[in-house]
Image 1 (cartoon, rainbow, N blue to C red):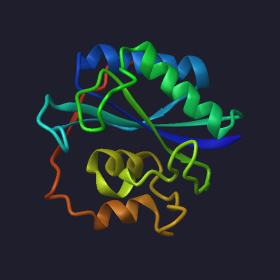
Image 2: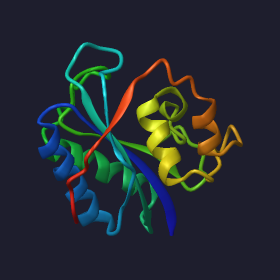
Image 3: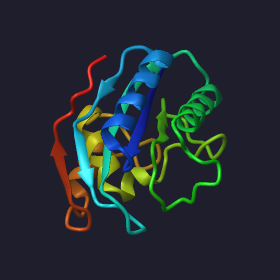
Image 4: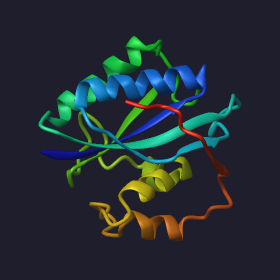
Length: 163
């Protein structure tokens, strides 16, 4: 079984699409480990605040199958195939880690956002603090401790989803 970590973000009808995304992930992968839910300002564009969290799961599916399922869930929840990188999202699911693989295709793994965005690193450090980054060879708790927290403000918000 591969250990997989996925980031989920939404800034359009946030409660609805957060629940839709988590329900679809649970349906496809079973038991999910969830970080706290965070609210953050949009990064890279002007838009509504996002909800973000990180999900951990175990799967027998290949990295390609996981990437395909994530895209299918996004498209089933209103994501446009022409969506710009920095734009509002009904649902954004990014494959962050798949075991200790280092890949560029079908997705960049480990995803470079892990060390660039507080809304990815903090929740990942919360649910996988001792896991080592496959390139940097530091664990996520250490990476979060070293992160410049003044550049992005996050606040925890209540998570109401239940499987």
